[in-house]
Length: 185
Ligand SMILES: CC(C)(COP(=O)(O)OP(=O)(O)OC[C@H]1O[C@@H](n2cnc3c(N)ncnc32)[C@H](O)[C@@H]1OP(=O)(O)O)[C@@H](O)C(=O)NCCC(=O)NCCS
Picture 1 (spheres, rainbow, N blue to C red):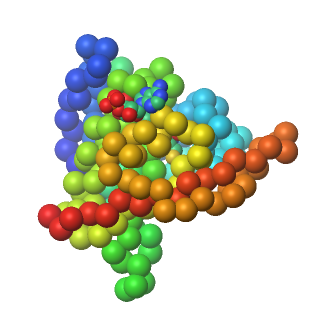
Picture 2: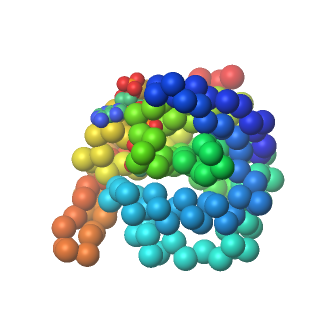
C-alpha cells in the first residue's frame, strides 16, 4: 500500500520525510539494513545475514507496496534512509486474517527523536483501516526503549519465549510476545 510523503518535525529541531517504500529504494534499503543491523543486538538477523540482492529486495518492496493490507514506511533525511517499519498480514488463511505483525527500526543517530512514535501512529491507523483486529510483535525482554514505545502505544506482554535469540558467544535473550487490540475504524 502506498502512503504519500510527509514532513515530520523531529525533537532536535530538524525534519525528516516519512513515506511508503518503493522498489526503487532497494539499493538504499540494503545499505540501511547493513548499518542498522550492526547497531543493535535486538533483531533476529546479524548484519552479515542480510544478503539480499538488489533484485530480490526490490521484489520484497514491490510486494509490500502492491499488497493493500501491508504498509512499509521509511524515514529519510539528506537522501539517506534512517528508519524502516512495516505492518504485514500474519497470513492469508481465513482464521488468521484478523492478525497483523509489526516491525520497526531506526538508525542509532536518530533514536529518541520521535520517529518510532510517528511510524507507530501511521502503522496502527493503517492496520485499523485495513480491517486487522490485533497487531502482534516480539521484543527482546531487555530492549527497554522498544518495550517502552510499545507500551506507550497500547501493546501488552502476553507471554515470554525463553531463549528466543542465541548469540555467537553462547548467551541467550528471552523474547516478550506482545499484542495490541485494535478498535474498529
Ligand atoms: C526501538 C526504536 C524503534 C525506538 O525508536 P525511536 O525513534 O527512538 O522512538 P521514539 O523517539 O519515538 O521514542 C518512543 C518512546 O521510546 C521510549 N524511549 C525512548 N528513549 C528511551 C530510553 N533511552 N530508555 C527507555 N525508553 C526510551 C519512550 O517511551 C519514548 O516515548 P517518549 O519520547 O514519549 O517518552 C529504536 O530505538 C530502534 O530502532 N532500536 C533498535 C532496533 C529495535 O530494537 N527495534 C525494535 C525491535 S522489537
